[in-house]
Image 1: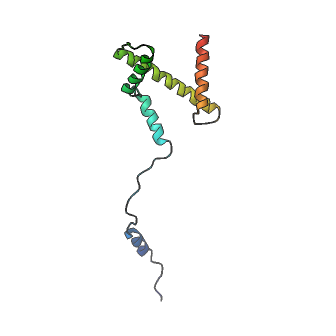
Image 2 (image 1 turned 60 degrees about the horizontal axis):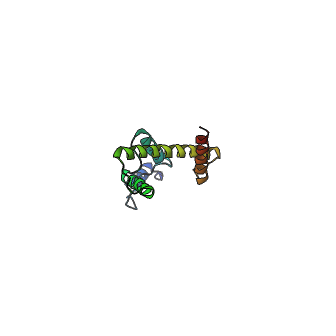
Image 3 (image 1 turned 45 degrees about the vertical axis):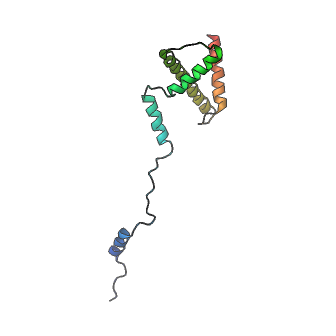
Length: 127
């Protein structure tokens, strides 16, 4: 009688004990969009300002310098101005996203933002 050639136990042991080749494990990668959605949720939950304060103040002072050289501002003024500027940016980007979706795209283009700004100008003129 010939010995059986099918010995399943030996194959499993050999497969488990085989050394890894390559050495370094790759880093875990999330699926597309998961990290972006996590960032969106994080920014929506926080009420913090997104633009850095110091560069925003420098820009405001530079613009004001062109108008009048001796203008002075309080810290509350910069905080209110930055809050209003960020609210306006959020509104424009949100409306631009809707315009892009209406056009059958998921990516905002420059023409979407120009359309929204022009639309907001016309709405303000009527009020």
